[in-house]
Image (cartoon, rainbow, N blue to C red; front, side, top):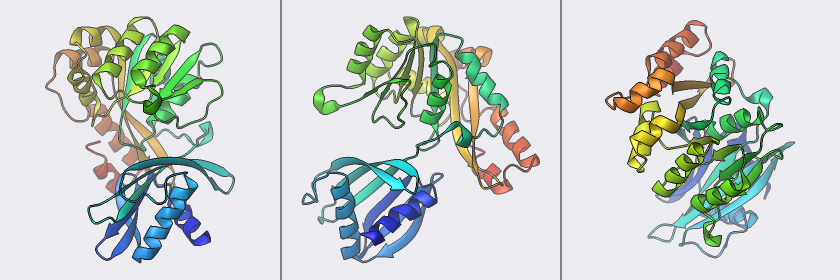
Length: 325
């Protein structure tokens, strides 16, 4: 099994967000997703690909003999001193060939959470002094959960923080952490209702993805809580549009929405990765709630990218690649 473990080690070593094991023609491809770019690591014989999938499914307590129906699994992976949570998803195609995707959820510490411009962190911290709804958007693996946890840690010693996620990605002893379990009838809406009875000061909502969760999230913010959550959107203006698409009336958004952030992890010249935020706050946010014509990234995003390039923090290729978010 050491050979199979090497495949995971390679993906983790490159800090991949995902590992894909996919049938392709007469062999299997192993691909990794790094910074939103999919790269082929190697091509292997069908027998090796199938045995690798079976090995990982076994480790994640999935049904090894089931090759067609979709399955989900989870496990912890030890990579040296580091413990990484893995989320697995498998399914068979019409020819009975199974594919598997492994999602890597890396633990973090304050020491490896880097900001391209540290002044942006103060903007975020200022929102902790208010009640209302603060939303984050960005691709998978861009650090949204890390940002919310890092923020909530600032107040966890004085306030009750409750996180509701699917799944819980980061173990945080100072928070009350609830995990969505659809099979047990515990979805986001029901856990939010339960959470409101527990009267936390701060909510973290892993993902606002349906009208019911959106409405409950707004109600939590209206009732005096600070709510941090994520939505799927390609920029800060898209966040507002997404909430309205989920049925939240503009009138309520004007009352509860205090900040909108879009974030990306940028590869830097020093070999590290750093977070860059685009944001809407204050008057800019109120204007966006009234005027729905704006699209794309803000002028501040482009200005900061240029400044990062001028300061030799990022390359010209990175500046161009992230110009549109």
